[in-house]
Image (cartoon, rainbow, N blue to C red):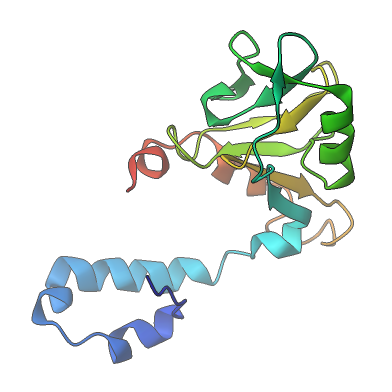
Length: 166
């Protein structure tokens, strides 16, 4: 499958099918163009964006918790049904930045797509599987006067539209 990114201004130039030009779709494009001027790319807000390990570690009966997308709830982490990994496997995940630090945003990439929560200081150490994205917000990247600074987090609230999109 080939995927490419298209700027909102180029959408109309690159589409030729008649169905695309229905009035409702044209209104949506106009809204998209208007709203894109207000947004900032995540790379401008985050010092680090990744997902968990793509290698399934060996699970053990007890050890460090290992989270997958099923553990990411709406604004919370479900620690009741987690798998466990060894301390050595966890140390390797920390080395490769597949372990969150307090304040990181965790987002489900599979299953409950788009469900997000914040990893808190009170949470136990965890490793992440590939089905969980990790965003490390940077307070340094944008000036505090930047329009997106005070309110950007509201866009991460759980959204039915995001979670049900296929």
